[in-house]
Length: 144
Image (cartoon, rainbow, N blue to C red; front, side):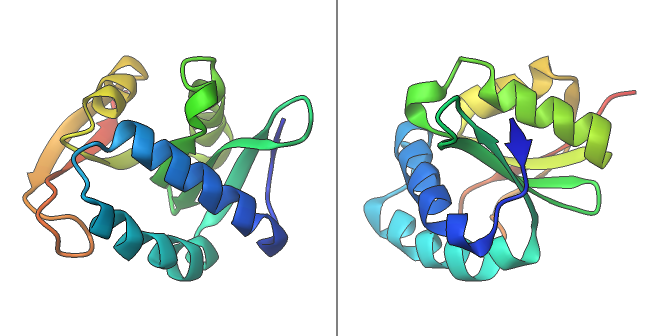
């Protein structure tokens, strides 16, 4: 089930974020995770249209944030990776929220491969992420 969360869900979502990042972003240093965590929670979440995927027990096992047709974030609990949660969220984003773009860390090979498998193609590359850190970003667009 995909729902829009309330601010009361942010605590559970940031746990999913951290769990996911530790599993998939092995290129990040611990200090980077601690740098991004409050930004995600206090600055990014309130600016995004957020959607959560809930498991059968109504526990959040994945979420995404969207702004104007761009997927700004997609994170899946590490225990639920490879079970269709990310695909369900992304298909919803494309079909129901008109998502056509996504930026992804170049070093996150699994995510790059996932987006390519889902029909996105790389259109540009930046040496730095949105916070100015040297983590190259690939901008991808949904191929029509």
